[in-house]
Amino acid sequence: MGMASVSEFDAAAPPSSDAARWRTLADRVLAGHEASRDEALAILDSSDEELLDLLAAAFRIRRAHFGTGVQLYFLVNAKSGICSEDCHYCSQSRISEAEIPRYPMLSREELLEGARAAHDRKAKTYCMVISGRSPRDRELEMIEAVVPEIKNRFPLRICACLGLLDPVQAARLKACGVDRVNHNLNTGERYHESICTTHTFSDRLRTMRVVREAGLELCSGGIVGMGERSEDMVAMALELRAMRVESIPVNFLIPIEGTRFSEHRALTPQRCLRALAMFRFTNPRSELRIAGGREVHLRSLQPLGLYAANSIFVGDYLTTKGQSPDADHRMIEDLGFRITRHESDGLSPGPLVPHERIDHE
Ligand code: SF4
Image (cartoon, rainbow, N blue to C red; front, side):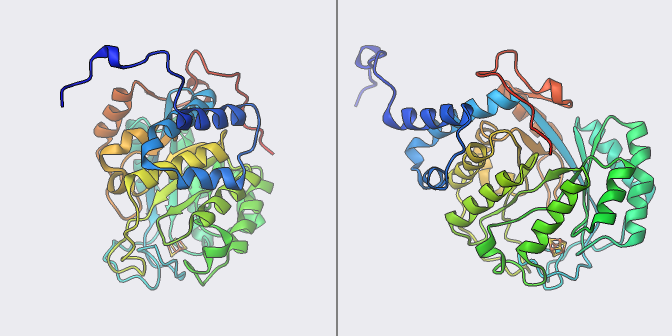
């Protein structure tokens, strides 16, 4: 069959129904509508054929709130392994047999070196993560000592991911200059007991409330591909919306040999992109970060993820490798997007609708 000539296309044809459906939903979200559970499920259940229409609609929302900016996050695993918890997805859990580095809290010099690496890679935020159920006092003391020093030297925002926190611990983090705490919900409430038995979904929600009450920003997201149903992913997205989290990292499970979830292989790049679109429609004003598993699961479709998300990690993840920072920078440049380090750089000159900043509680 020969190629279609230009005259065979009708330039005046109305948009296809898929394009119109997602575009209308995006416009409603931009006008203040909160996407419903059914609408979120419809996004996850949509076909591969309508994926580009869905992403184009998600991009309308992303562009209105974040322009074409991409925020980079750099993560340091400040303490690895040696965890008492049994999170089934995690290579650092007490039930994991994965071969990973195990070490206690990094030194002040090593944490400062991580901050330098974050700055060199054009990151906006430096995330210090420790394994474990909750931080020990000496680990908190190290964070308290190093954060002011980092902030003196580099224009970085600081996110701490230290496990379950009580109000005193959260207040100490706020007082030393931590901007944000990461504490992931990981999945919906129904499925949580299938991924961890040593702490509950309520424990996680409690820590999120403690963080909020301390006046810190909240970063909380989850992991897709752990055997959950679409309903679980949607339940998590709506819970995050109810908590008005500033930032949502979406991980795609890397089934690590030696962990209980090493056999999960259900993700496709298209499913991952639909998940990102669902989080964008349900949480239009939250930063949305493509986190662990980006390279493994999105593969050659990685750049498409940035039409829904506005952030990525640059560098390695906790116990797995990421692609090189140069490749990430090039991907952003090739998209015609730009790296943003400050809140005010994020918006393109012409957002589709007037934007407002996230209201911090
Ligand atoms: S996710 Fe955190 S708390 Fe759970 S096993 Fe891994 S390091 Fe421990």
